[in-house]
Image (cartoon, rainbow, N blue to C red; front, side, top):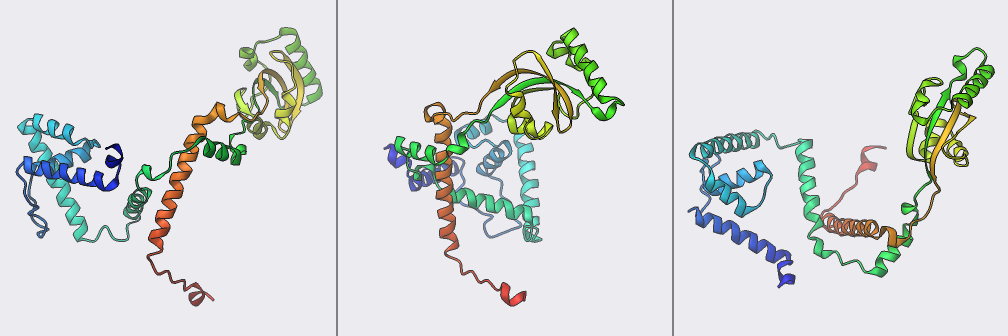
Length: 293
């Protein structure tokens, strides 16, 4: 039974039956506006569908109950909104406003993209072996780079006449007063980026201080001031709080993440095949060489 309910055709028939039942329940037997662009027939089903799209809620039974519970005034407001929306939509179509519109074009492409995905049941369940194979093929994607947390006091040599002497004076002051990390802002010069960094990768650190700075501070003693340390942007006194070397997590540690990635790639493959099948129905003529020589 569950297999039958997952069948796309069965799902389509159930949805069609539900819509037909709603039409019969509210006494709607046909679509009287089908051949008259200037006729708008107000039906309970039309208002319920409109209400669902406005509220972005697509539970049929809930929508029916909500509609039944509405006051007469509320239904009149809903009807007026529906008429306004329908009239403007039809007028836009009659004026060809849907043609050559990039936003509408993108929306239609998105809808076809969604249809091309099909139902997720077409993607085979991931086995343990498939998960392991996928993980091994994408090891570099799951590597965790080295990270560090630290606070620094910045000294800008270009802001001082005698930089060497000024750096020594700053070092002596830090050694004497031994400020905490929270007090670092009282010392040194203003830095372009942050004064404190938490769990930043070495590459992120190097992007602010210059190549090699992250590796340099990785060997410092923790929770004590070290320096002066020269970077591409100046001189620093650094208090290293934590350092985590880079490592490769095991599949067991990140199995849910790997499974999600595998399923997403499988779904992308299904969609690509579906789109390729659609493209195959078209005759593609490339005349570039005839136009541009």
